[in-house]
Amino acid sequence: MPENEKKRQFATVAVHGGQSVDKTTKARAVPIYQTTSYVFDDSAHAGRLFGLEEFGNIYTRIMNPTTDVFENRIAALEGGVAGLATASGQAAETLTIITLARAGEEIVSTTSLYGGTYNLFHYTLPRLGITVRFVDADDFDGLRAAINEKTKALYTETLGNPKLDVSDIETLAGIAHENGIPLVIDNTSASPALTRPIEWGADIVVNSQPSLSAGMEPRSAASSWTPGALTGPLRRASSPTSSIPTRAITVLATRRHSGTWRSF
Ligand SMILES: Cc1ncc(COP(=O)(O)O)c(C=O)c1O
Image (cartoon, rainbow, N blue to C red; front, side):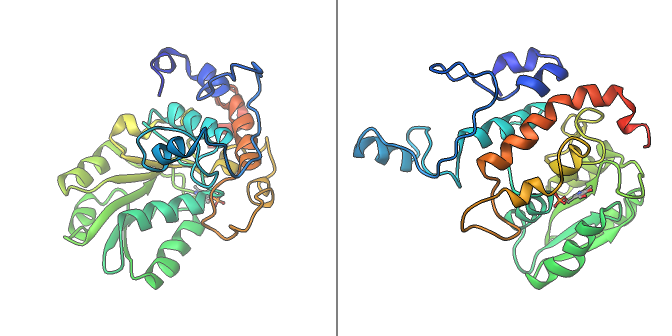
């Protein structure tokens, strides 16, 4: 996160965060870069990029300037060091878990879970050999007892959907860290406008952006606008896909003060 972003108010970060204005066009809105590939100055330049000796764009599945603004904006709003955009919240959850755990390993999750996440954890992950143990979020002894040497993460939601119970993030982070594992938290229902779990000790934050932006943009936008051959639940967000929530997120601070969250 750029140093000046840390000094900005939340509402300003929601509107401008993560964007470095293009020096040539000076476009105010975030441009949509509909490109898969990028031009290299010469083969030595390409070599340095692929060798990770120099930062730059290589291929859009890995990096795209439009997607980059969205990733940096969310990271800045959450107070994280970096973000990764996927085409859905469930893709973000899946990528997180399969990065942390492999076949034969385990996750401990609270029962404060969105139904789709429960299905992913209960039915799909076991097919990949990953076992998820479920314990109520306020049963701290039960959570400690469920963690063993195979456990790779503790998982919860800030506000369980639909129970709307509040996870004690600080205590859960403490339990995770006592055991040398990360606390992964789904912050969709609260959003960084209400709670920033990283400040309470969480290590990885997942958001379902269509849900977060609900009321602003159609949910289907994130998936139906994703072009290309990479279809399926794990696809990376494309540049048009990323531009939608990047716009929608600009009103996050306004919605914090409006009736949007009052139903909670
Ligand atoms: C709390 C929560 N997490 C995750 C998801 C899954 O997100 P997506 O539908 O973007 O895959 C949802 C969807 O409603 C949700 O409410």
